[in-house]
Image 1 (cartoon, rainbow, N blue to C red):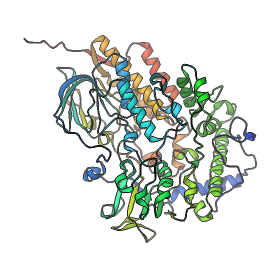
Image 2: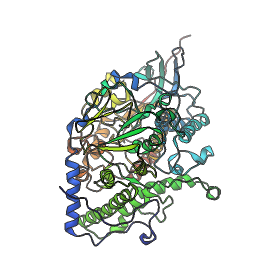
Image 3: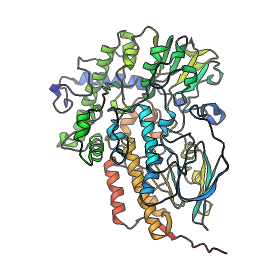
Image 4: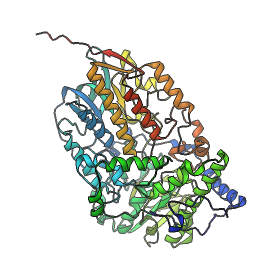
Length: 632
């Protein structure tokens, strides 16, 4: 057995110790080659015992509609809608709202949102679990703050405020007027005579739209692991994105009073569970937390917005702050860190190329590995300090590179395990064995439960058409699921040949880009799409990518690494602990077309802007919109 590797480094939090200057210390020269190999071996050991091909298996939610029901709003009866709009946007999360808003700003008047939920907000409509909050600073995460004249109450906003901001956007741009809620698109077909899309829904709507934007998002499809026996549980069971407050009592910010006499189990210890566990721990009679892989949990250190700071902000502050955050987390040189949080401090130390000038690739890789090691040791040292039971603390320590999983930040998660009613069940990387009628089995031990909460995240592995829930029939009868049977084929990640006036906001590995601040990326997509639509309208044309241009872009994407933040991304992912980012530990088996643009998001955004500024709609095939003769 390989013992844990521990050094007495200080915990790393929201601000660096004074001795670290502007960021993290570059390298700890006292780490010997033997010690470095020791920790590498520990990482490999932890990785290897988590390799399990069955982790790809998930429950088909079509057979479990109870997990898809809306617990927050009643479905209002209405007659089917049959009309025509300028543009139809599928999805009303921040991606859909930004798409609709920018289309409206480009002059389109009839823009319709079609949304499965009972209101706008997307992930922030569904995720109302207790303690839900943003892990990116709200001043750069929440979109259009200056335009809407709003400043968040906290540096890291809680879910109710984020949801309300989504509603604020919808009101500001008049998007409620044509919105269809509790409505799912079931299919769409291109009508070449009308040069428009005919969109059908599960409520018998038939809507004609000149342009369509699909804004499904990365967190729109629930993921339920196919644990043996999961259908047999007779207690209360729900996913965190469908929180049942009628059962638990309370709300997202108040005690879950109905759990006072309940034994509760939570499967999962990722970003959602890190926020949920403290809230459930406060009231449940007993809480079992079932862990496959521990998360990195850094200091959150949230605080209210300083009125004096707010008053000092000058016009354009959010754009500057947001772009500064993105550049730093991309590893690009900046003269100042405007955000200065745990994200920017780590990424500046790890990725800023100016700090590694003159080094060979091997030297740079070693320096970065040592920076990563120090950061992870800081996190593991914090766990040892916060959690009183040494065995529990050791089980909660993550042994992998920091960028292998999305980092978490919380000040109450670790202390929750000091409470007498909270128990960690570490599955030693294997996960829960099975679910019974009365509980959960791990290591041949059954843990009886009244309530089972699934903090198991979202499906980002199924095919695109499966995740959005409908197929698309384009020009000449071309079917999207058939065209993409061997992987996505796009131009810039937002259009695909054979589907005129059809746009989509790419999720990760859909040939767009990736970044820490998802909403910044979404807005860049939406600005780009809205500009194309506006130019189509101005010219009186419809169109999409030429196949040869699309092929060239796909070749460019697949030839690159698509993991610019990491360097040798494929090797990095092979060595990471299994998870959704690395295809459960087998990134080489992932479809090569399922990749991101080979460059940072800043480079990708600049590429899109240059393409727009050229004004030529280069790579698109355009045809005049047919003039339909009106017979009186």
